[in-house]
Image 1 (cartoon, rainbow, N blue to C red):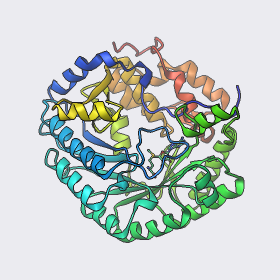
Image 2: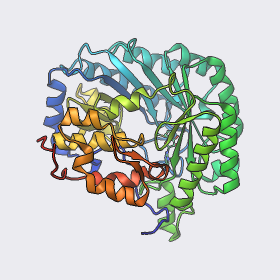
Image 3: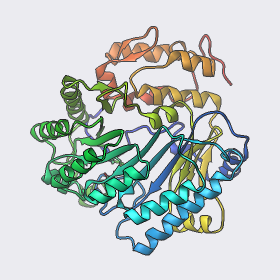
Image 4: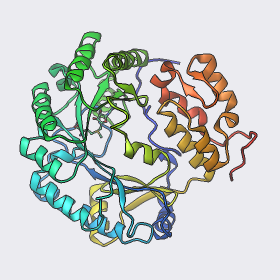
Length: 433
Ligand SMILES: C[S@@+](CC[C@H](N)C(=O)[O-])C[C@H]1O[C@@H](n2cnc3c(N)ncnc32)[C@H](O)[C@@H]1O
């Protein structure tokens, strides 16, 4: 198999894959919203799809060059959608345990727009019980008053999209910011005293070299963020890089997977030497006792997630769903007082078991006891041949009492996860229907 970074998706975001979600499942999603509330934690994801510029590697639903009136209109739609969702039987009266403002670029919004948006959402959902409120920022969109406003609005975790410190690399990859803006923004973020700060990096941007990567890691270390998230550059088919390459008949010059894994491994070592602990295949955390990943962990263990905004993904009462992925239909639905559902899927119990196994494995180990108790399936017994193959390849360190990935396995975890997809092999202790 080629190790080259070819066009296509690598990162496993959910299971069953989005390609299996159906547009004719509207009634299934409606039934999920009308079901009696469950006792799992409830979270909220808000998609803010605006950016100053489209990164050439970006595969998310984003809009650039949007008129101020459209930003206003969208913010109002989010608040209206929140009201519609919060009134449904499965949601009504439930406190939010976690909130995530993602994008796109939530920090694209002005202070006034943010205050109005948060007021609008809070009119429908209380988040005083939320253990984590995360807000994604692009460095060049921040100002000192905006950072202070984010703190005052109740954000507990600021995630800054640094990606790289080389101006040449940032420019070649179509980022809107340069390194000076990172440093400026970081001073404001550090001074504001958020409970948790995160820096996003990407290993293997176009133009990356050993030296530029080392420098990016060193400069990130100097910021001393509470956590750092390191993605390996992937090239989904809808990215500018892939579309341009198709037109010119050439390949996108991104390092191969072995090199990207080596770079992430080197970053893990560098952060580790300063006391950071590995918390997943992508994240390191400075003080695991103090800083946890509530959104990640609750969602990966089966929490509900109400999704607001165009193209957002949610999960409620055991049903996956996605909102309308395009601007006009999204706004038209909300304007008409309807939840803007586009497609959905009700996974079987077995599929939910696979989902929690593969998402959990991104942390590097299997919560065997929890999965066995919840699904009546012992993940070690059910997939023993898979684990044994992984062991032979050096991807797991041990199998008992629960399978644990080696460093090599952790660095390529997303490529391992499809081995668990599909029907669960018959095994002792298996049998959840
Ligand atoms: C949804 S994006 C939002 C970033 C935010 N708008 C900003 O400008 O900083 C979240 C993160 O996904 C990661 N990401 C996006 N596209 C990627 C790709 N093609 N390969 C790897 N990581 C990617 C980046 O690290 C990025 O910070």
